[in-house]
Amino acid sequence: MPLSRRSVLQGAVVSAAALAFPSRADDLAPVYAEIRRRHDETVKRIQQWIATPAIAAESLNSEEGVQQFIGLLKDAGFQSAARVPTDGKPGVFALLDAGAPRTLGLYFMYDVKQFDPREWTSPPLEGRLVDKPGFGKCIVGRGAVNQKGPEGAFLAALHAIRGAGRKLPVNLVLVAEGEEEIGSPHFPQIVRRPEVMQALSRCAGVEMPSAAQSADGTLEITLGAKGVIEAEIVSSGEKWGRGPGKDVHSSLRASLDSPAYHLVQALGTLVTADGVDPAIDGWFEKVKTLSPAEQQMIDAAAKHLDEAQMKKQFAVSHWAHDLPFREALARLAGQPTVNIEGLVGGYTGQGGKTVLPHRAVAKMDFRLVPDMTVPDCLAKLRAHLSKRGFADIEVNMTGGYDPNTTPADSSLIRAETATYRKAGLDPILWPRGGGSWPGYVFTEPPLKLAAGHFGVGHGSGAHAPDEYYLVESTNPKLRGLDDAVRSFVDFLYQI
Image (cartoon, rainbow, N blue to C red; front, side, top):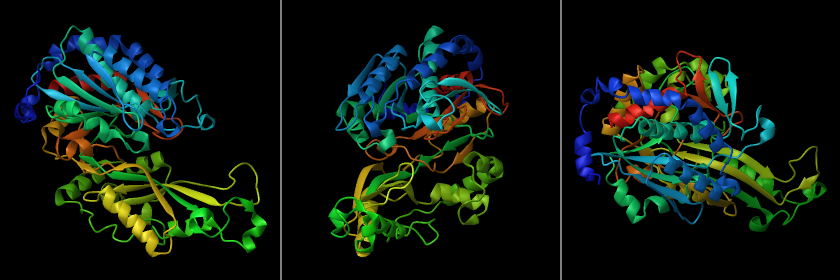
């Protein structure tokens, strides 16, 4: 059985230099050879996974998705992989006991975002291998980089170790969900189960597989992530008591109020006049400013990152407020946000339709930074709207969670850094990712574990058309799939 959490942590808290294992490459030569031998098998496994999209927002394939994922885990060597019911989509709890002295926690997701095939240049569920100029051969498909490619690469590392006749150097405790893309509303129900908490308490930290290289080859180690509130903001004639209670002819607008414009006016109060910064009453009261150490990380990142490449990647020509690059990076790490994901109301089909809609909805997300919390921010949002005459506007939270942070000197982050450097890469420490993941369930009490993302390789287009994951790199700055698999092997031995 794995050792106690205290023993695990005491064993893990050693310097990165002591963990370098200078002879490890020779020891693992058969494993690296197995990675190369299994390349096509790994690609096919990822493609087959992409072909079955579990989309929580559409209640599509969740049961098929969880069963397929459980099969992948057992095939990779997990002795147990159990479906965990929740009030929403099911999760997974899996164990791989290698009889090792140390235990690593893993966070996986098996769900993906929605997609419109008409927006893709190849079928989003085919996982087609496409040559992308400047990058190389890539798998293109929904979930390719978020998260089936990196997760598939991690599972391939387990196959390679076992295929080479080696025992895994650590025990694994894995928790997974099928609702990450809708804000992980029921993930705590998975983690807080007694047997799961007991297993996680033995872990030296929790890792999420990643493709951490940006398009210019820069590699970041993020020390946390913003929290998020996902919500639908709804205006309706029924709730307002003004405007129609059903869609009516637009000629009646001269005599009737418009719930859609009522929503637009309410949304306008949530941000500054230029539409950039949050303007919700009290929104910045608990915002923790970036520390001097975090400011130094941003200074270092601004010198290494390629601003022109980033602008090209996002198809933008200006940062908000026309700020310099360094200040734009600081906002990415330390600024809360108010964002409209989509607006739905009335007729949105081809051509016009003269209608006065009775209901309009804004799908929104609010990114939170330390020390903001979901309950406090949700209360402030509702109070802000009520104060301005919008008490009738519904705020229906669909998912969300608090921010998370892991210290730079934690054994987990030091192991990540040592592994990257062993691979000839020089990572940039980054205070906090601009996106979100539910790492707070691990980093906050009662577990208080280090949590992070790890994995070489590159991909892009998450949540967008033509999402891709690099398989065979033609760019000397970027690593392909086999290198990604190798990085996970090295990381497990580093731990």
